[in-house]
Amino acid sequence: MSFIAVLLVGIAAGFINVMAGGGSLITLPMLIFFGLPSAVANGTNRIALMAQNVVAVTSYKKAGYFEWKFSLLLAIPALIGSIAGAQIAVSMSDEVFNRVLSIVMIIVLILIVSKPHKKLSPAQSDSRLKRIGLIVVFFFVGVYGGFIQAGVGFVIIAALTLMTNFSLVKINSAKVFIVAVYTVSSLAVFIINDQIHWGYGLTLAAGTSLGAVLGSKFAVKHGDKWVRRILIVAVIAMAVKLFVT
Image 1 (spheres, rainbow, N blue to C red):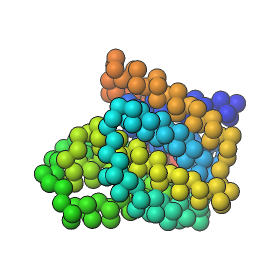
Image 2: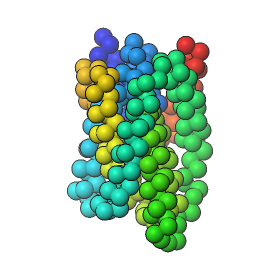
Image 3: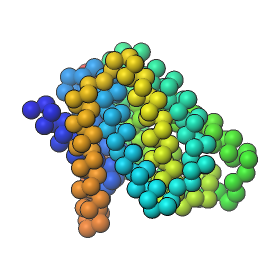
């Protein structure tokens, strides 16, 4: 029954990721509620993230939207940062991690509702100074992604909107590539430290992949307003539960 529940949660998370974003805000705390230690839940969630982003990278590649050199330039510092972030995650106690996660969930929820990245004006130039700034920013993006991951997409979109002239399609193509690359290193840290539940991880990956397909079809017909409302209620409830546990 627990595997069925993980599959269903994965489907819901994949659906929400396409419709509104923030699927890890549901999968990560739910894995904890299913009895996994926080570090194991965090590592297990990376398998689903890897599956999702590999599929997305393949899709963008076929569509011809990739800026390979630029994406790789930012993926390398993010990869280095993710190793540090994952090491912090595996060494942190469950109690502290759960409270940090609950606070992060509320912050990311505010970002989901307010959508500040959509109010940003694109940069007018792409200078060497901005590239250096992006390298520094994406090192810390990697640290955060290696540590928790939830909501990192909003940070990436905001950074690239401010500091590049790319369209949103190209920004998203860079985002999924960068996340896919640094997830490899952070996942490796969790594997080395034996912080993976492979059964749940593979089941979750199957669920998120299916949910993404269903969500993309639903989004075309109905939009995402009601999904955002469900996400708001679910995240608030789980954040409170994590903080007081």
